[in-house]
Length: 103
Image (cartoon, rainbow, N blue to C red; front, top):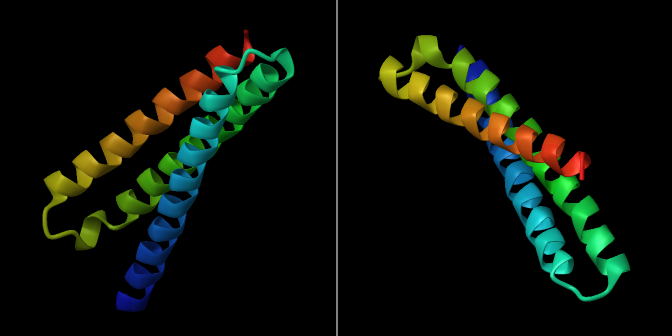
């Protein structure tokens, strides 16, 4: 069981990196949106969508994996709050993608 928990923790870490990468992609996109050139603005909007989608996927995966650790968690309440937090972040980023896609 410990090796399975370790694999899950490693997957959570990998998705944390994906989330961080998505944050950086979205930030680069936001910076490009500030450009006075239309082409740069359009590229920035696409990067924002990609970055937010990456974050949404990563947060959803982290929520699922964290939920799998509930049975072995030292505090089930803390574990449940972490799952809820990841789901809220995923929802927020998903909404940004939906809103950005409609503009």
